[in-house]
Length: 299
Image (cartoon, rainbow, N blue to C red; front, side, top):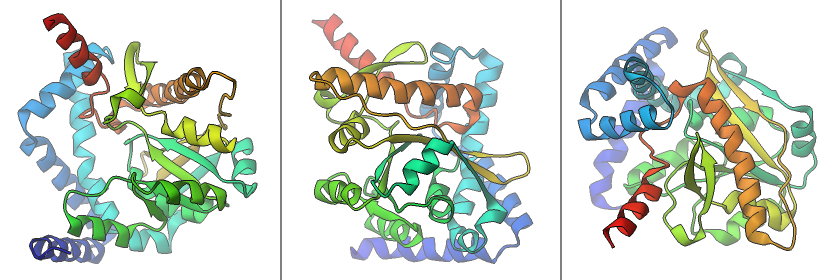
């Protein structure tokens, strides 16, 4: 670990220890306080982009846009505190997390054949690991980006209870499925390699998404399991796993990937419409498409 990373690492450990020392009620209040800070201190240009997405693509009016955006941002306070309290949550999972799954999904998890999990940056997605580690009858791995600072990366590995795979660890990714793991993809981040992206409809507009989950599932002929986590009014989180999506496999690989990815995104869209406050509206799934159109107009 680089010398400059040590202050961040030790400060993060101290913050985690502080969060775990708080009684649950005080931790909840502290999280809400941090959430209010996220709303007030986030740069205005980032809020402006999120407002545009909510108005133009979600169809929210001005009042609803502000309500959804504020709730979406303020949840990061409680979320951050909960992440730091994961060691406590792991000791008493059923107190903090409920679980429900389609019967066919449970059969897939018990099959021992491995598969693909797909989800969004929605709700407290960092609790998937500890929740699935307790409830799912299959080993779980998650595909994650390396953190900006090596110290944060080390801390994230320390907290997570499932196997961590980085995007450049292709062999580990494929080996994990062969070993019976279900590998989780957070699919809503930007696609860096645009030539490999697929175009599908999302909230009534063309967007680009990674075909990686569809590609992996098609290669191994394993199911794709969409899942979400939502914080309920009583404070407990509910992990919901939908029915399996079976990857399309014909002689037209590209068409198969588009069709399977579109099936995934339809389920994502339904969840976002139900719980818009849960999603990270700072991600713009439409920006890359629009940037390309603007470049074409300039020429």
